[in-house]
Each structure stands twice: as structure tokens, then as C-alpha cells.
Image (cartoon, rainbow, N blue to C red; front, side):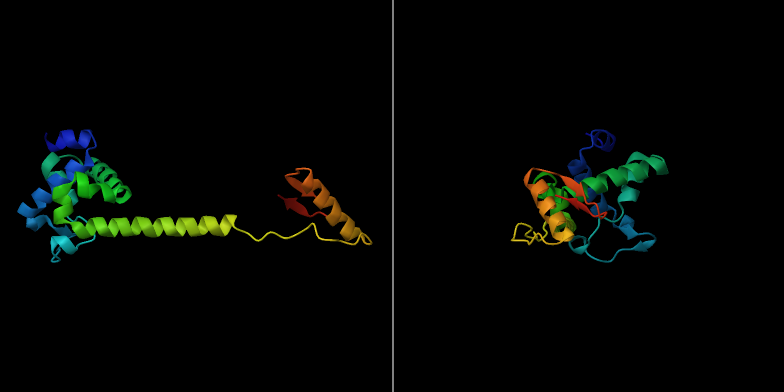
Length: 165
């Protein structure tokens, strides 16, 4: 299977395996912008030279190179744990890329869960305690409690307060 077929089928595991073999034979292309990356393959956070690999292998336009790079990068960022099993050459050559991407995903998930917890977990105020009915405010509170007990989703008080359950 050639690189064009791999890209057309979006078989990103094989794409990254082919990249790993190619970059080992073409160390000159292992660059970040114009600078040659001197860090060993097994310690980098990103697969440098991927644009050069796409350009050399497919000979396509800059727009298509960007599309392929973006799609493959999204896949690598979203599914790094599958690379050890399905992209063994890439995983052996660039183990830290996979570990780094997995760590970033775990960090994103923790932040998202923390935001959701912050949003959904709130203290419940007890409105069913004994409340004296001597003032108008207390009558409003008793009315809100009664409506809440009957299943009201939201209430607007005569004072302009909006309460949602």
C-alpha cells in the first residue's frame, strides 16, 4: 500500500509508521521550522518533519499538506494509546510523543471534569426548615417551598427574584 492510499483511507497508524521509517533514513528533515532538531527521536514531544514527509511522499499542494497534517495530528492527539498496538514502528521510535500526548489528554480530561464538578456540584440550601410566617418575606419563602414540592422548575417572585430548581 502506498502513502497516497494510506492517506485516502485515513489509516493514520500506518501513516505514522511510514513516517517513522522515512525520518530515520532522512534525518536532515527532522526540523522545527528551519532548525535541525538535535534531540533524539525517543525524547521529542512532537513528530518533527512531518510536513516534509508529506510533501516528499505525495508531492501535493501546500493546502493539501496542511489538511493531511491537521487530520493526522488530530488523530494522534485523540488516540495516542492505540499507537503502541497499531503503529509499532512509530511507538518504538517515538515513545515520548505517545506518552506526552496521553498525558495531555489526561490533563484535559481532569480539567474538564473539574469544570463540570464546579458547575454541577453545589451546596443545597435547606428551605424546608421551620420558618415563621409573620413577615411577607417568610410567606414568599414558604410559597417557593410549596411550589418546589409540587415540581416547579423555576419561579419568579413578586419581588423580582428568579429561582430555578
